[in-house]
Image 1 (cartoon, rainbow, N blue to C red):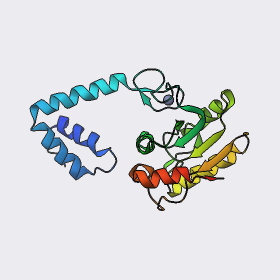
Image 2: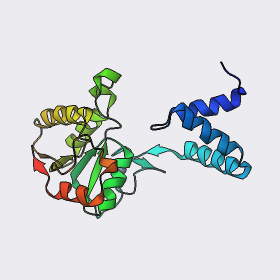
Image 3: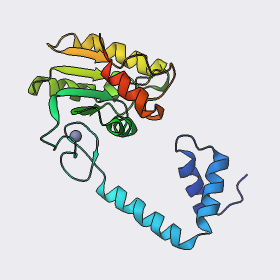
Image 4: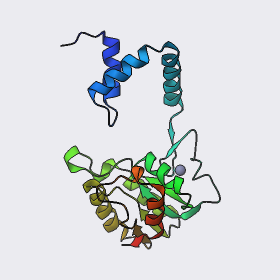
Length: 198
Ligand SMILES: [Zn+2]
């Protein structure tokens, strides 16, 4: 039974869609925000700006404000070393280690047949296109140690056997079930250094 004005309910529904936020938290956030007039305006403007400026790097699909992302555009980065990750936050986590000087490829998710995420829904064809047009020597699979991450790693490692390159994955320092984004820098850095060829 709805008793809230539609515009508030609409806002709550939007917050509720975000990961890790249930309807209760969504409601609390919206009520809190609506009581802070200046913040509401600032929030609305920031969202509109983000929506207008959002752009994906045509090479790696990382977020960018225009054209290539800062990482792909950096001549100091090794373009022959590509780290395959699921999400933007994984790039942030690996960048924080300061130990990776290659470039990335964002899949925009992980395979999950139950949720209808099949390989064609991910940026896998785009990865193959990159392999065909660039000299890539090594691909590091840096995917979550979850069922979805494992399934995606297995799929990709089979596919990548068709290409003359080394395929490796992060060492098992990362606990089972852990997400890359929540793994601490030291563990992630060591998992990267001790990556295993597969
Ligand atoms: Zn890029």
